[in-house]
Amino acid sequence: MAKRSHARRSNHYGMDDGGFQSGKKGRGKSARKRKDDGNIVEMKSRSQQLETAYSPQRTSQPLQAQTSAQQAYIDAIKQNCLTFGIGPAGTGKSYCAGALAAEALESGRIERIILTRPAVEAGEQLGFLPGALDEKFSVYIDAFRDILNERLGAGTVDYCLRHGRIVAAPLAFMRGKTFNNRTFVVLDEAQNTSIAQMKMFLTRIGEDCKVVINGDIEQSDIKGANGLADAINKLRDLNTVHVHRFAREDIVRSGLVRDIIDRYETT
Image (cartoon, rainbow, N blue to C red; front, top):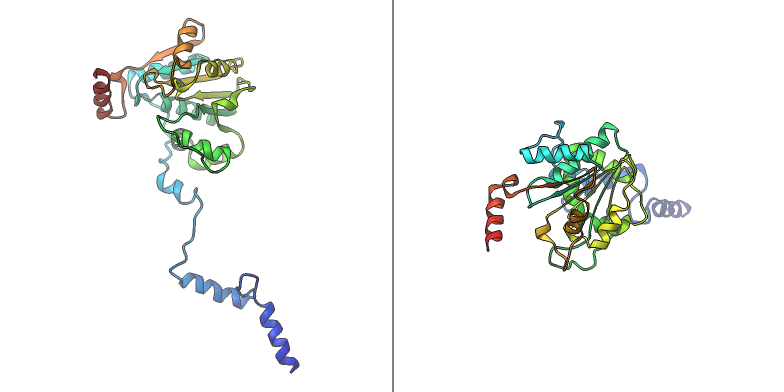
């Protein structure tokens, strides 16, 4: 009678709270059962599965300009504290800025990359986005993540994001910050800034930092005057400020993009 009671207790305590056996023998049976069960799918992390499948292959080649306009833009960024890159989509404005920032971080010339843009949708309202702030903002900055993954590698980018070496934040969160000489800052889609937002951003610039502001004045998604056009008019004659203008002929994304822009600009 005592033996039967002891057996019942052993059976009871050999099961964990989830109903799986906790002993070595139980773990082996459970593992074999899970392995043989075709309905169980192992979920891999983003870095193990999605990054491998969709991230661009890391390149070890230094940045090479595809056009003379890109080379002039690259030289301007290297030589000036503040560079405006304006022009149509597909000219490589964002890619060149992101690649130069990655090279500067990797070489140790800077300690931090700051990527920012106004959180403005292109003609539609996405409404509430779930998740923490960085998850909400990631949809606006994904293009830069692809560039950095290509230049630095996905693992390095993940590490830098976790440790604050790469910061991606909405433009509204730039108030109160100072960009020092160890920082490379890129403001993208600047045609969607208001005049007040652009003034706030520009007054964050400290001594000897590197700031690049990109945008297409013709594709503003806000009503009224935009901060990009206003800033160019006000600052274009200042020393260490360069305004680089890309033309339709400088589009490298595809010939179709050039044709599309031609049709929209002539109607």
